[in-house]
Image 1 (tube, rainbow, N blue to C red):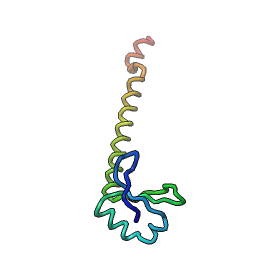
Image 2: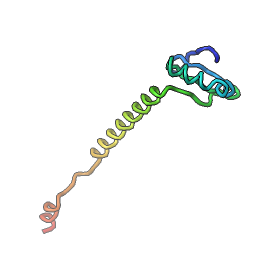
Image 3: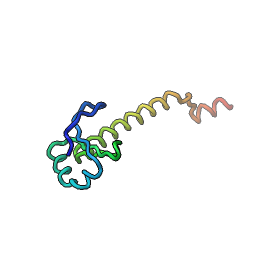
Image 4: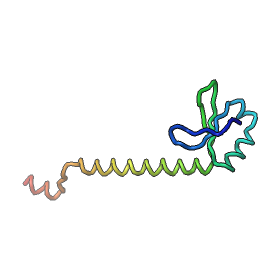
Length: 98
């Protein structure tokens, strides 16, 4: 595999390999990921196409995404409640109509 590099966006260590390398060394890649927990980026014709991460990293990302979605939902609900016009109960409406 190619040497470990540093991802420019996250500043974390990653390994970048070609699809062919991934096909030829998949079991080794999985073992390395489980041991080092370093993502492996898969490239094709020089372009990054996919990433292999540990199951723990995947679970962490899923949890972070779910928490962020919940936060967005809570904010949207709060805003929707604030945007509601004042309501009138049925009894109040009956009194107004008399």
